Image 1: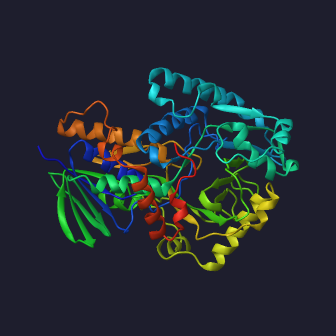
Image 2: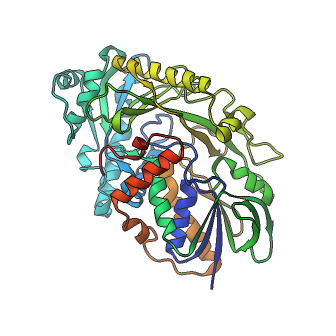
Image 3: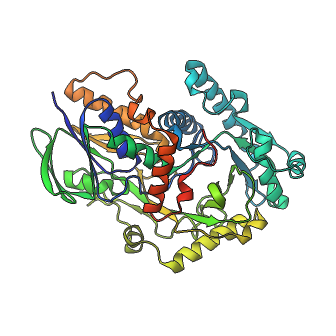
Length: 471
């Protein structure tokens, strides 16, 4: 029995679902109204424990740990193997070791996952999942020679210690095996694999403009590079912050939020040696919110700072209404998404990000604005802006709505969709739906080439498509 499945949206949720269903031999049509796949809100961090977010529950962090390992298995060529350093500023009301109970739970969970399946051992040795470093240890490390290819936490900490203003943080600092994700490489992986699947049709620059329900399923009207009407047996809404538009077409009422965010790229010519990712904890939404330093190749650094004048925006968080499931961003943010940034706002916010992080790394003041920000709008189901773990909902028969907040949730999301499709169409599901030969046969050099092309196509330096440290 032929089953035709429509997926609307070519972000990480849409492409991962398309890969999973295509791998099962189902006929899939993926609609993406832009020319490129995975061009939405930025992601850069494998949340293998969720320790960036002190405000979320330990159980949510345990879920993120498992989901992150699953994601790394699916997209190994997209992982940048570097640890994350967690530091607590002197002005922060919490203490560094407040994270310790959570970290001990996560280490125990990681041990269980490795004991269940040895292939889960992707974050190094269990006992080294996290490590604590005192001020004295960091002072000693600051005197060492920089190591070009670090192998241990000590070696990763050398560049951090050499550049740190020790008076700006509390001690100790904690190093956790939470690695980086390169979004351009995820786009390259998925694009190359999907293009090689004969039963998957990729319709770029095609927008679904109307949906009608029928006894058979759903009739979609679409326009753009290809215009037509077509019947589908099952519909998947993977449109990210525009999820509510499809819900409105189907008469589905849902409460959700949408938040506009940006991360800023800078070029630090004086940067030397290999860097870990660094997180300076803070209280979200205040002028001392969390700061996140993400290194890329050849001196590029991506910055988040969860303050209202850097990564967050006044009126950037909006809610759905009783009349529409689609939270409407104001015109300013929609203009940025559709037409790009004004040079003045780009310069202003990027410089604020440099100033924020150079409080901790004084030598970073010499950094220059690298390119346009990585930016986009993120949907958050429900009414809790701190939600970080969500996967998928099924508000109608034969209709799935992707609701991921973090990219690492895509495996659980896809699995739930496969199970829902199997329920309606009585198909057999193979044991491991995430063994996808089209992904496994890809080679690093091909992904390098495509990832650099994707970065340039989206208006970023090709350097952002490269990995500094292979996984």
